[in-house]
Image (tube, rainbow, N blue to C red; front, side, top):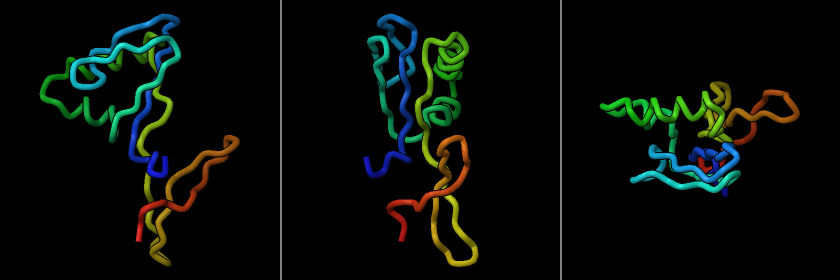
Amino acid sequence: MAVAGLYTTVKNVSGKTATFGFLGLHGKRLANNATFTVPGDLVAKLGNQRSQRQFKALEKALEQGTLVIVSSPAVYLTDTADGSHDQVALSSNTLGVTPAQGWD
């Protein structure tokens, strides 16, 4: 996916099929080790809702170890010297940057 930095991917690591009511419009049933990808930042999306019920359910799933966040939207940076755009990247436990796709 060329624009993977725009999405959040989560994975069911509960050891069994489970339903996560905060995923998708009406909840999503995921088999063990199955992933689900949503556009944007899932944590921010749920955290900015009027009701905190879905955010608390996500928090509980993460705390209990039934769900993990595999990837979340990238952090984009602009170089003030030359105006180039990069995104934060981690490779072999070394933090760095990689050229951002889709920027002018």
